[in-house]
Each structure stands twice: as structure tokens, then as C-alpha cells.
Image (cartoon, rainbow, N blue to C red):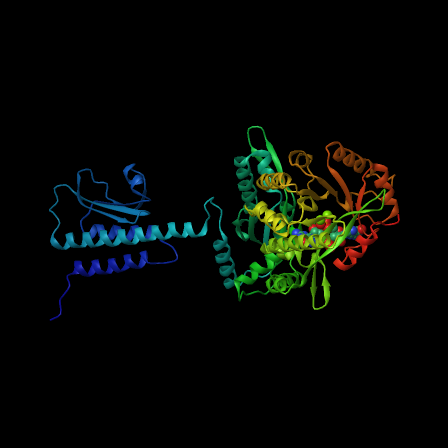
Length: 562
Ligand code: C2E
Ligand code: MG
Ligand code: MG
């Protein structure tokens, strides 16, 4: 027996279907459309008013906040509340619906009552679910500080690629330069303000032609239109950011930036490839010295591949004994005597010698450099031990430690256990460390150097004079040796840099710090050293880094004829 629906029932079913349609439209929730349908339903059920509210949480509900989502109102004075439904979907979303009728009207009949309940429950379930979906999307696409995150970037790239509008645009990966120094100078809170404002400035510049996101820390990733790229590059090269509006205090922000311009016709196969390319460019910009903006090229990619090869081959090469310690003599410029040596690493690969520049930076990326550094320390200790055992005069050997080692809290213990195991006198080892720019590292550096000092192991500042040489670094940390970089070394006595060199040497002497000049290639430079009282030199004028056998020969000869 088929049931014959009343006209009222039929009408309701139609409206209900429309409502479900409107609410499940995934593209966007059309509030007006839902309200219109609800109006029709309310009329059918003889409602004078209906109010649907959504709240983010209980607190918002208690405070009477929330968002009124759908309402229908005949503006009737005498009305009464006939039905309430409340729904709580997890902590993130809850909703409430209230239905009113004109006072004095006959009460709901069974049909009206059951449909009112059905509508209320359906409506709330959908709206709460939508709300929750939005909250989750927000959580997924933004990081804790409110910056769009990497997932936003990927979504955007995929969407625009699918629409075919990515071609010709540019992906940009940039790092704020020396941001820890900025934080140090103006404080963390102002630092945060600077970072936000810098980001907002870029976002504004890009507008709807792209997207700006944060990868983490001071590392950002964005997409911009081809026509905007020049402006974006200008912005990232240097921009003044005001962080205190009351007095206009500001800092200049510069970045290391990698840029990958998408080919004109471009559809993504592998979204990871976009990231790889732009990050390769950004890494080059970070490592590449003076050039702070680097465009992606195939050559760069080859460099990345090479880096990955080195990183892959390293563990086995270390086991195979392919890394060797070469020794470059340090010479007293007045007497010509060898007073020490620096251990420099060489990779002997298939009978060919690979220079540090072709593997050290790559190993620094993965922190494998720390293993290599400890290996080199062991080698140096073992060689010194052998020289002592063979009755040679031992000389102090310096070993380079990458700054990456600073992250190791047990560094000092580790160094000392290696030296102690070898059984050599502590004062025959010197540890070379480079300058640092961050305050965290500064503390670690101070701790490690002081610790070495207590153990009677010397510590030297390597490459002094390039980068951020700070006098504070020299003053606050108990260094034994200042190694002046060859770029700081004057070519001859009337060079413009002579005065500065002279006073650095004098300052070091006054502070009881030993001075050594690196990269001495000419007799003119040697004269400069004699003139300024910098008594120790290292450089091609005397010897290149030598294999251990060659170095031992030099040790026997003892002195150079100058
Ligand atoms: P560095 O510690 O400043 O070492 C001095 C570099 O200058 C050496 O380059 C040396 O060969 C070079 N040099 C010496 N005299 C002269 C000269 O008269 N003229 C010129 N043009 N160069 C000279 P090398 O051996 O290629 O090492 C380069 C850098 O690689 C080192 O700079 C150091 O930072 C790093 N390195 C080398 N071995 C190790 C290691 O075992 N561990 C770590 N962490 N870094 C290392
Ligand atoms: Mg060195
Ligand atoms: Mg050096």
C-alpha cells in the first residue's frame, strides 16, 4: 500500500532537500540561500521566529557571544519559545537553535513538532561540522605564531598549478640575515614585531598574485607574480622596519634569498621538486659569501646533487680511512723555526686528493662534520704521540672545530677524553674555533673555551678579521691565540690596512694573546709581520699543508732559511 503524502508533507520534503543541498555545497556555505529556505520551512511549521547560533566554545556561549548564523523573524510581539536544541561537537564547536511561535496560536501538531525537531538537529549538525572543519583548516594552514605554514604553500602551489596559472611566476625562499643579532640588539619582543611587520609588508606587496608563508624560524617561502619579482627582490635586499611606533625606532632587514622562476608552461609533477629547487638557490645564497640573492640554475642543482653524494659517501669513507690529516707548519718569522702546525683535512678518494672546500660545507649541513672533527683530533693526537715516542721534539698542533660542534653539550668532555686517551701533554693541542654571531652560541663558546683553558688546552679564534669580528668576543672569552685571516693581512707596509693590522697585533699582545698571521705568501708580508711584531706565520711562503711524512721531514730540518 503506497502512502499518499499530504500537500504539507510534500512541500516539507522539497524544502528539506533544498536545505540539505545548500548546506552540503562544499564550495561555500551560502548563508542567504539557507536563510531563505529556512524562512519557507518556518512558515510551513507556523514559526514566528528561529535563531541559530554557533559558538567557538562554552565560554563564548556563556558570555552571550557567538555568531548568529541563520535567522527568520516575523517580528511578532507576543511570542513564546517552543523548542530549543543544543549541540556540542567537541571543544571546538557548539551550536544552539531556538524556535518561537506566536503566543495564543494552537500548539504544534505531531507533524509540525517532529519536523521542527528534525530540522533543528540537521541544521545544527551541519553547521557545527562546517565550523569545525574551518577551525581544523585554520590550524592546519597556520603556525603557532599566525604565519601561513608550509602546507599552505604546498596547497597554493598545487591549486595554481592545476589551474595552469603557475607558469612564469616565482617561488622565493628567504632567510632573515643576522636575525639573532637583531634580537640581541632590540630584544625578543621587538624582534617578533620586526619579523611580523617584515612579513606583512611582503604579503601586501604580493597581494593576490601569490602567497607568503613561513617554513619555520626566520625562514620564509613565498610565491609571487613575474611582474612583482623586481619589487620583491628590492624588498628582500633591504627594508627598513619600524618596530616602535611611539619613537619610530627601526632596523634594516636584509635577507639571503633563493629564487626559482617557474617555466612559462608549467605543471607540477612532484611538488617536492619546487621546494628542492628554491631551497637549493637559498642555500647557495646563504653559503655563497657576498651574493645574497641567488637564482636557481641547473648548475646549482648539480651542486646539490654533489652535496648529497658527499653526504652519502661520508660514513663509509670515514670507515675506510680515506680522510687524512695534512699539516701546515707555523713558523717564527724572526728565527725561521717551526713552532707548531695546523692539521687540515684531506679526502683521498680513488687516489685523488679532495680539498676541504669540496666536502666540509656539505658535511656541515648534516652535522657529520662533528664526526670528522673528532676523527681529525684523534689523528693529530696519535701523530703527536708517535713523534714523542720516536724522540722527536713535539710541536703544538691545532685542530679545526666546526661551530656545529657547539650544539653538543658534552663537547668539552669529548675533546678531553680523546686527548687523555692518547696520553699526550695537553699543551700540545690547540683547538681552532671561528667567531660566532648568536648569543646562545656565544655562551657555549665561552663555556667550552674556558673549560679547555682549565685543562691546559689552547684555544684560538680562527679567521679573525672576516665576518663579524667583535672586540667583545675577544674580551669576554679567554682565548690563547688570535689567527688573523689572510684577507686582513696587508700586502706591504704602506697598505691602507697596515694601521689596523698593527693595532690588532698590539692589542692582542697587550691582552696576552698570541698572534699568528695566516696565508703569508710573500716576503713583503713577512716584513710586515716583523715590523708589527706578529711573530708567527703560516702560509705558502713556508709550506703548503703537507702529508704527515713530508711534515716529519720538515720537523727534522727544524728551521726555514728566511
Ligand atoms: P682554515 O682553518 O682557515 O685553514 C687555512 C686555510 O688556508 C687552509 O686551506 C690552508 O691550506 C690555506 N692556506 C694556508 N696558507 C695559505 C696561503 O699562503 N695562501 C692561501 N691562499 N691559502 C693558504 P684548506 O686546507 O683548503 O682548508 C680550508 C678550510 O677548511 C680551513 O680554513 C678550515 O676552515 C676548513 N677545514 C680544513 N680541515 C678541517 C677540519 O678538519 N675540520 C673543520 N671543521 N674544518 C676544516
Ligand atoms: Mg683553521
Ligand atoms: Mg683560518
